Amino acid sequence: MNEDKHIRHYMVEFAVPAPFPQDLYYIIPEQRSIVNDLFTAGKMVSYTLSMDLTKLWVIFLASSESELITLVDKLPLTSYMDFDYSELRFHQSLKLLPTMSLN
Image (cartoon, rainbow, N blue to C red; front, side, top):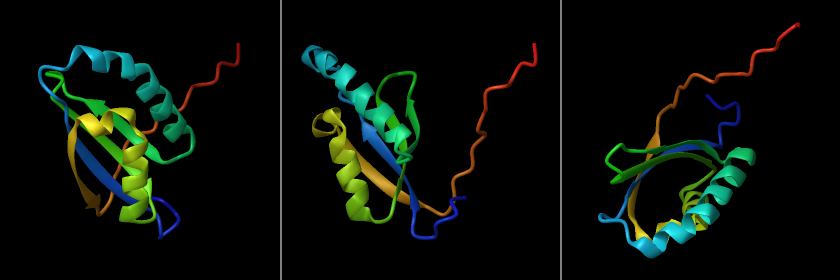
């Protein structure tokens, strides 16, 4: 759980267009770059794509719904997908830290 009580967890579910339009493949590198920026900024906790490529789930950290929407709108593919979101009571995950070698 986050220490700051004003930060909330939101699960956003995107419906990926199927079939995926060929011209959207050119936007994926920009999407990945922004995803990496959001992870680095501590605004994104997880980013998961279903095996059948039809659903994308993202957990964001935001102080309000309006901040959440601002974050969602930063993703270039958002305008091509429908999405819905829910505020989470909690989100628990295993954080794997790199192991240090004493060799």
